[in-house]
Length: 68
Image (cartoon, one colour):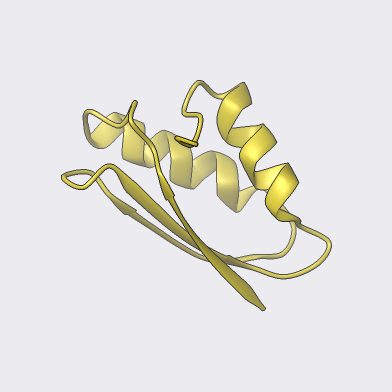
């Protein structure tokens, strides 16, 4: 299992947090999601078939792209 932390500048409210959690949970292989609204940070643990590229792609698709 892999774990990654991302800065998500577009997080501004609880709705943002719920949207990110809901969308990521749909990916097969997601094991843990923690979104910190105050720090605008996402921590996610995953395993195949999910990949980091797929997570980043999904975040961009739902308008919460990770900061580079």
